[in-house]
Length: 138
Image (cartoon, rainbow, N blue to C red; front, side):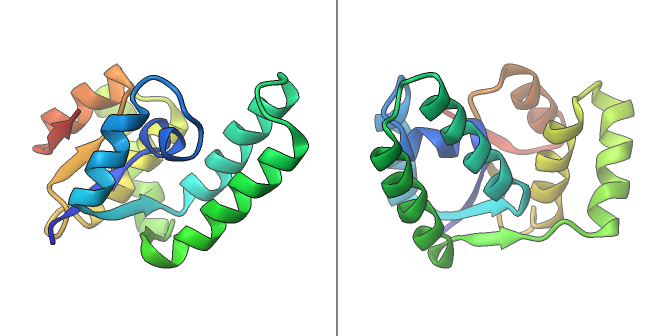
């Protein structure tokens, strides 16, 4: 099975039903899922914001986070290394990306030989990933 890198804008749709969730679910059935270690923090933050805004109850938040943390054992998790930071720094300058987006793209680039597909719903990150040679979905 081919590997695809999912950024947090895509990954969150697996755990919180919103526009694009069905597409993400299909893609996650098609590919082995790779994520940045950063996505663990970003997912926790994104889901907690949904709780704080009233979109999720505390019970639902706890359930969704437990499911996400459990699913991590099935994902390829790309660690954030000094090499990743260095690459992300160059991507900020090259593409004008924000800090966390540059870390996502740098993580994906570290495994590009295994994962040539990049899944994101962020337009600026999509453009940068395409320029770096990824096939970007959806």
